Image 1 (spheres, rainbow, N blue to C red):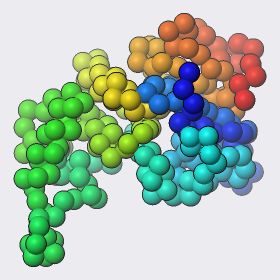
Image 2 (tube, rainbow, N blue to C red; image 1 turned 60 degrees about the vertical axis):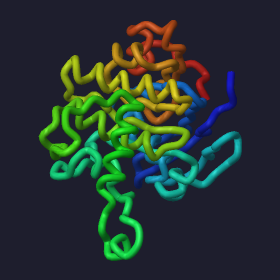
Image 3 (cartoon, rainbow, N blue to C red; image 1 turned 180 degrees about the horizontal axis):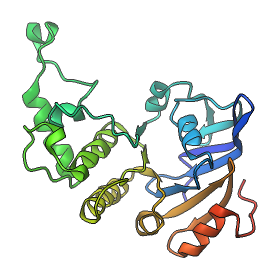
Image 4 (cartoon, rainbow, N blue to C red; image 1 turned 90 degrees about the horizontal axis):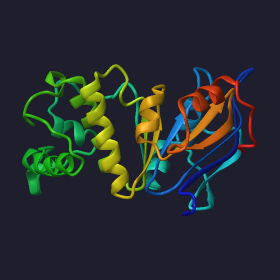
Length: 254
């Protein structure tokens, strides 16, 4: 088994009198999909924020490639090849898919025109086409606003954008929420393709059948701590639900 790419050890995070993380630990290795699951209030969002530089833990440590690091901003996380696609997508509905892919990272035209702020839309569209094809994102027309696409297509673009800029790891927060069956499977296929490139994927999801269908491993949070870890190929639905609810005995998952 390969060494962890990203690891959290005994993270504690308090918001006033509320302790969102109570010694939470987490591990993800290169080239695997790890599902992070837990009931509402388990600490999943807080843990992801600490591992993507949005929040800083009050104590504990975060390691990348076995070395302690300070992820004190999303920029610092990106410096380690870590990107995050949040549940609200954060797409610009009036822009086309290519413009959304390069949102905040636009390519300017060479020479004086670029200095004047002119964008190289042709180059961005060509590179976007390559990225979408690489991850199996099928779009009927790259010139239409993303707001005119289906929910599954918009979500696939959001996932592809994070993956395009991540070099090692991408967090996906509920990427299939509110999608139909066909659209959900399209997004899951993108996740599998990302894993097959050697990149690590952390999937945050409440959909247990979905988790078992796409994840290699499952880590369970409950009340701010990791309480169980499963090999997805050997886990059953009742195992995951039991760990989330406390019906199964808590193992030493630190």
